[in-house]
Length: 192
Length: 191
Image (cartoon, rainbow over all chains, first blue to last red; front, side):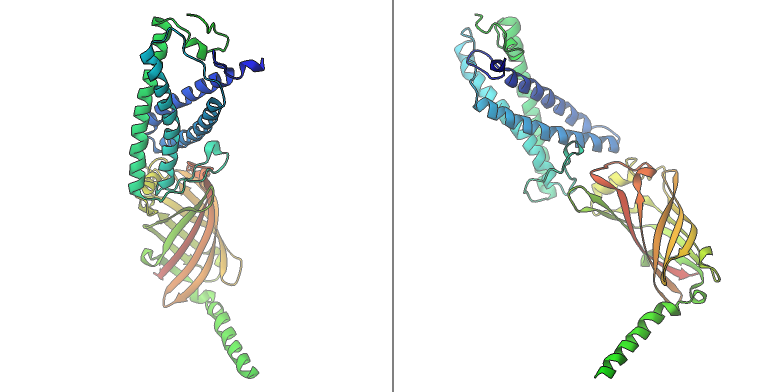
C-alpha cells in the first residue's frame, strides 16, 4: 500500500491527490468566503468571517508549501499519449501559474493584515499567534495589498475555472484519464 | 546636618500625610457634578501577542455625592455616551459604535449607579454598583483613589475591570481579551 502514497510516472499517489482536493476546496471556499465577508451587513459577522478567512489562509499556505515540496520530491505523471502537443506545452505553464497563485494569495493576505493600521492579531483557529510579516504599517500599504489580494483572487479563480474546464473537457470530450487519475491512484492510467 | 535632614523629612511627612488627613469627611462632603472637561474615561483591552486596544469616551456625565457622616452612604452615578468612543482609528470607532459592540444607535447610554461605597484605605474606596450596557445589568466594582480636593473641586482616579462578554460585547474574543481595563480621572465640581 505505501506505494500508492507517492506518485510514479504513470499515476498520482494518494498524498498528491488528497493535497490537490483539500487545497482546491479551501482555495474555492476562500474565494467565496472573501466575497461574502466583504458584503455582510453585520460588522460582528464580518469580523468573525474575516478571522476565519485568515485562519484558512494560513492553513492553505501551510498545505501549499507541503504540496510544492511533495511535488518537487516526487515523480510527475506523464500526460496520456493522446494529448495534443499544444496542450502538452501549455498545461505545465497553467499548472505553474496555479502554484504561483496558491502561494501569492495567502502571502498577499498575510501582507495585508501585517501592514494594516488596525493591528488585528492573526490567531489561526484561535490556536497560536501568527506574527506579522516585517512590513511597515500604513494606510497606503494596506490599500496596495488589499488591491493586490483582490486582483490575485479574481485572476486566480479565473485560472481555476480554466483548469476545471480543461479537466471536464478531458473527461467528457476527450474521454482520457486526466481527471480520473486525480481521483484515485488506481485508475487505468495506461488507457489510450 | 542630621538635624537638617530630619527637619526636611519631618516637613515632608507633615506635607504628605495631612493632604488626605486634611480631606476630612466633613471637608469633602457634598454633592459634585462631574466636569467632563477635567475628566477622562479611558479603557484598554489586551490582545493576543501583546499590546492592546486603547480608547476613551469623549462624552459622559455624572455626579458624586459624599455623605457627611457616613462614607458608605456616598453615591456615584455616571452615564457614558458610547457614540463618543475614540481609539484614534475611525474604522475601529465605527466598529465599536456598531451593533457588533455598543450598538450605540439603539443603546445610546451606558450607566453606572453605585450601590455601596466602602472605604478601604486612607484615600481609597471600593465602589460597587450596577452597570447597564446594551440592556444588560450586572454588579461591578471600581476602586477610587482620592487625588485631591481644592476649592470646591474633588478629583478621583478610578480603576476597574469589566468582563465585556456579560454585556453581549464578546466579539473578537479570545484575540482581544474579555477584560476591559478602565482608567478614569473624574473631577467633580461642587454643586
